[in-house]
Image (tube, rainbow, N blue to C red):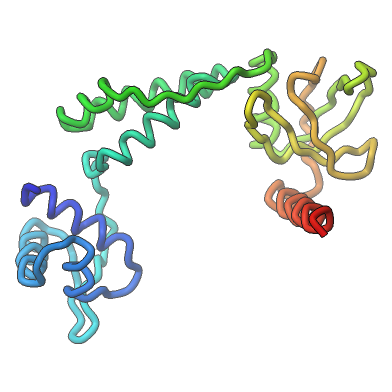
Length: 232
């Protein structure tokens, strides 16, 4: 490992600790000697990094120091690529565009050997999604982001259509479908809606009366309790 990479790894490690960390712990995490840790700390200080030293406690990074993406290791790069590849495959045009943009930005700042890894990787995410209206998916995401009510015409398993006013708060991307979790005013409770069964959707300007995080927590607690009851 080159010394420059070692210095970057040391910086990244210091960022992980909110409180002082000893040279021994740093040495063990980086698999180098404590003497090397002391030398590298001094080198970073000479380069303007504000690292505080407290006797008996250790070292602490006093100011946030932005690390470039080149500190990613090979496994992290592959994980990001796989996630972006999955995003590029889902029926949501905005996410597809975003995944391509992130990949281009990543390529622009990664060192050459990492760019080569991205080009040569054969990791792929393969999912056969049920056909949906991609514009409708984006509208649902927008409604969740803005925490506004939506009105939908929804088809159940028997293809019966009902009109619902929903408070959308979460989207789940499952094996082949996208599922919306929402509070349904018609049923006065939490319900799940497959996006591919939504026939029409209209966004309102009306905020629903709870924060989406609160709705998500209430829904999650209900689902966990239900799963526990079913097991018993």
